[in-house]
Length: 247
Ligand code: VGL
Ligand code: ZN
Image 1 (cartoon, helix red, strand yellow):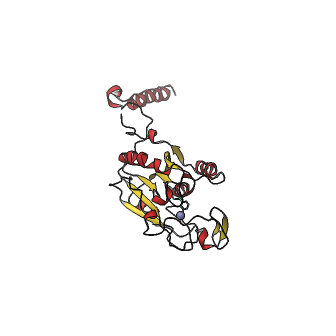
Image 2: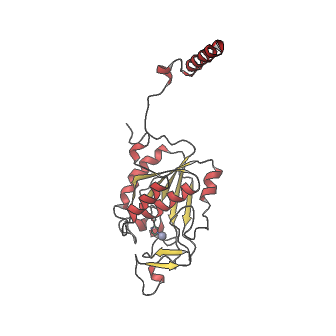
Image 3: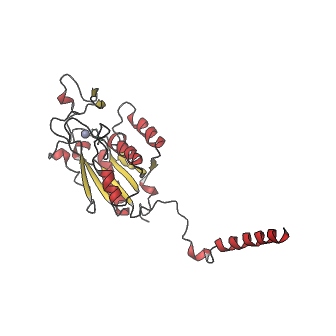
């Protein structure tokens, strides 16, 4: 009994010693709480298009302010995807397609509740083009969404019917991505739905708040944050990302 106890004690001390780094003060990097996106992380830049900034057909308040922040923060990423809202001219999400209905009212479409919008981001028009100042030369994929006439798609992953995939999850998985950072327009619609679907698809998900701006229709921004936080989406600012702002 005695020898067994002393054996255990010696064992405990030995394993304690073995777990202590021999040159802790020289090996360990200084502790930092900054995020450092690695080669398995993807920045998803959502709908930074002319129609969603000042002068566009569905302007998001202060929308153009996301451009310099996204340009800067993108430098911390190896991997970048850009999305474009890309509607047919007769898209079901346009109030103009529903006689007697006005923008920002809601209607019921076969897949559920739909906000009606002013005509915006029509395929191939200047409004659908990316904002001029956006500088993402290393972006690897542009994914267009909302191109089925009868189905809206706020999310970059899944159209509003809940079952038509854009293919983005499979693309990210095929590339070994496990973490996504989402930024752009609008926080409470396309950014939020993209982030929620990213969680559903199993990605660790961050939304960069100061690189996004909201439409905020009847409390939609607060509701979107509640849903995102309940789903495990992390709300961060560009300052929490290593390297930005640069020292
Ligand atoms: C969006 C409303 C309609 C967005 C797109 O990009 O957030 N919002 N279409
Ligand atoms: Zn749209």
